[in-house]
Image 1 (cartoon, helix red, strand yellow):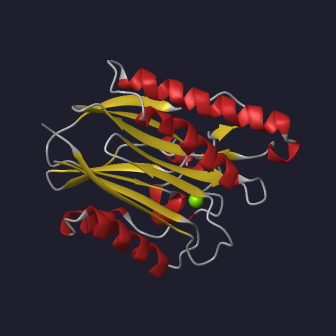
Image 2 (cartoon, protein in one colour):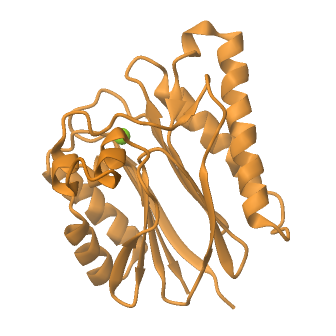
Length: 237
Ligand code: MG
């Protein structure tokens, strides 16, 4: 019988006036959302989306976790549109979402934006999400190297997010899970300043999820903490 042992944390970082990230972690649902737009109520958007999809935690593990997760993302998107229709000041809000729903043997993954998911398996670190950013598109087209993308001044420009103005188009997949897998969900406040090598090293050497979350957040702050930092670490036990 497999289960998730998990921990989560969120930190304002060192340069932002507020934390617009939202996070949810339970034995069934793990999710990170990063609100978009400085004065565009990104905090409202990320909290709304996390609150909406957290309803998945109350319903039992149905036969179709990916369908349930996709429907929850649609619900969250609809909720953002309703809020913007009722209050024009919310019209420009948006958020990323990276979420994993556990059904006891597999993980359904929904991803939109530039928060990330990683998996540590057999000592190797795999990025299991693809950033929906302009720079990632340019890397895919061969117009930019990953190194150039990582330091590009407009690297956080999103091609896709959960917004009030467009339909939700998340990447959806189902992942087979093995005992010993370790998953990390994080906002870009971590990956902007902490390299994949450092993430790999931390996840490989710190067994306790709670401590791993805290140490990753510390690393991002030691790197300057330019943005809000949110992490979820979950072990399959
Ligand atoms: Mg961010």
